[in-house]
Length: 109
Image 1 (tube, rainbow, N blue to C red):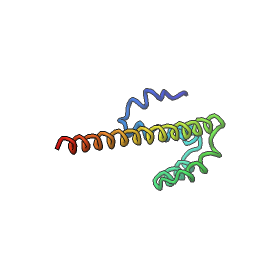
Image 2: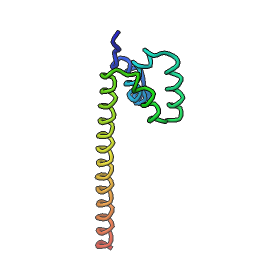
Image 3: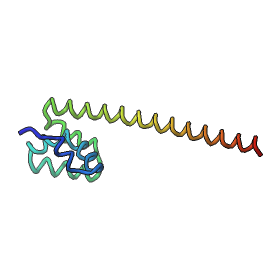
């Protein structure tokens, strides 16, 4: 049975959507493999040991599931780089405005 991800994501707040997005590539393998794999997954998830999660899950995932996980990693890296760029540009813009304001105050006073 195919999962309606849009309907599932619609049931969560922003934090839940973010967490579900992180877990989404692993969910089919977890459902297929059962409690033993799930316990290991939860143990590493609590420790936030993503390298161990990947090592544990990768061998249980299908080729398509692995590709989805890899695509998510690449997309997350691109998103993080874009967010860093936006923050840097915002900081430059704010610093410029503060410096300009200081210069105008000095010239006016």
